Image (cartoon, rainbow, N blue to C red; front, side, top):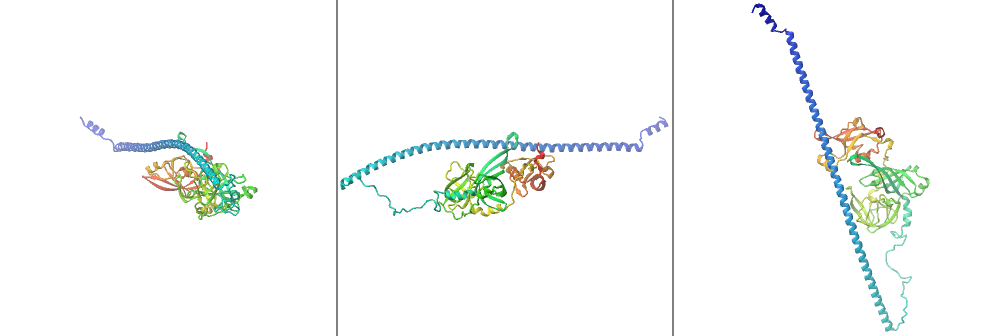
Length: 497
């Protein structure tokens, strides 16, 4: 190897300084790109895992809800089956009792007839013996009767006497203009299996009592359960004329509501015939005191029943779990009588009939709310601003799919009471307000909610375009936190297909 070859080898074995920097920069750039790719892949995998977990949770909740629905249906079937069996046994028992009662009645009749014949024969024998001993003619004088001066001690039940129950026509004719019949129309939402929640039209009947009014309106007291879920309320007055009514105020706890009717909506002839009931006192009632019940029994129109006070301050628990202190009376109180008048012998209002409690196996028992316990409540409800359901044109829209959960399900998973949000529509009023899936709405404009039905009932009084205050519970890191939002309601007509 010569000098020229050695110089050439040394020159070819080394790159210029700028060339090494370019290679290093290229290698570093490649390392950075690979790091970015790995980071992007890891982020994608994390997001996919999070989405898979969310979907798994939704599937789990859906499966549990379906399992709960199947359990509820099975329980409903078992209850219906048990009720049918109970009815069959009751009919069988009643048939046996009827046959036994018939046999006993027949035996009593035969026994009485036999005794009568024996006594008659014995009396004839005694009379014949007397005739023979005294020589008295067989033609005996007629037995004497009570003279005009004779007196019989006892309680007078003559018509017109205070406490009379034999003829109450005078009292009824004076009071019945104060009693009205109530007809309601409403909409309820129920689960329909595969088709989800659907709306159904309902109707009902009840009674009410006119208790006064203002310069422009008339006030009618009734039971809360008569107008609960009603979207349209119609009153029928003593002359058969009708008028639309609205809720002035209500107290679910006391099963009480006061309705309002605009006087301008009543005919002059109707206004001339109706009158306000005279309010009495239930504090002075005594056991055995006579009472009169007037109401729209079974929706057939006004009917009258009489009875006595059977019990005072009876603690009665209804099927919905509420308990009230009521008067127990022997006058019949049938469905439709709810909200009607319970009167004393003076024609004074001493109670509001309540047919919320009923039992096929119990007869001769009725209940009424004592008037003295609710007098102040009626005054308060009468002074409230009317809550009038909005029209279909202004009906509100949230954009939320709700799910009603059973108490056992919510208790097991620690879900608070309220309207459980299943889904939120994209760009819906609820989404714009910040409501998310799995939130639980617990309050709207200060009204506490136990479930979706409470929310649906309250929304009837809020028109689209209005803003409401919402309180909800949201699950954050394993615990529910309360959040307050303002929500501007949409119009349902804008979102209908």
